Length: 292
Image (cartoon, rainbow, N blue to C red; front, side, top):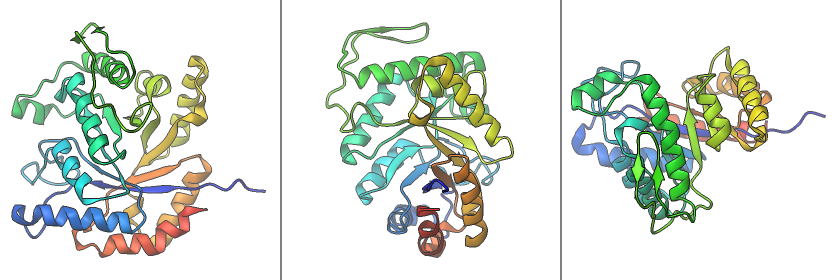
């Protein structure tokens, strides 16, 4: 007998340039997030960028700051989990980041996630004067940030002293509603550093949809074995373009991914501000992948 698997779907909002322009952006975002929730999608994310990125559109296109946007969406939705996909580790000091995610969790009534990665966009960082050290240092700071967030979400209020960060008191009041902490998702498929950090610290990984996906999952499993972590504890999520395909093709592909153990598929929806594409997902894709 085949094992029954379920696949959740999530909406990634990366394009904020809509026909109504900046004056209508708040209303457009409300309609999009509410429609995604009504369609049965389980997560809504936004990019943590300050310039638009090339694969989505010209860098001069509209871009909103991630955590301000998530706070707004928390007040407009009731069920979807909310996160930045993914937070650039070098853009915010970790103590403040933990406080921001905690605030989002409290005000969303327990729906926040910490999506985080080592950051990559040097152009926007230099453009706005954001801190952007070497790749090696960003990964070191990523690990320290994860340690700090976990300490702040614990009962430990003592100091933290790392190579890059020093916190004299890791007090965090109020605490997150989700205990022991909001779920942590680490984005990226780097085999030596990123996936090992997933095995050590994260509740979820995020990998790109592609032919090397089975290999990346095998690497993660080996890291889990090395560290004594239960591979099954980690939610396997994928970012890709399947939600832009016609429903039949999308469902067939999601079924293939489910056999690999993928539990959530996250992606952009073309023309999302028109809302109808979300309704199609809700009627033709979500029910089909709920129990493949």
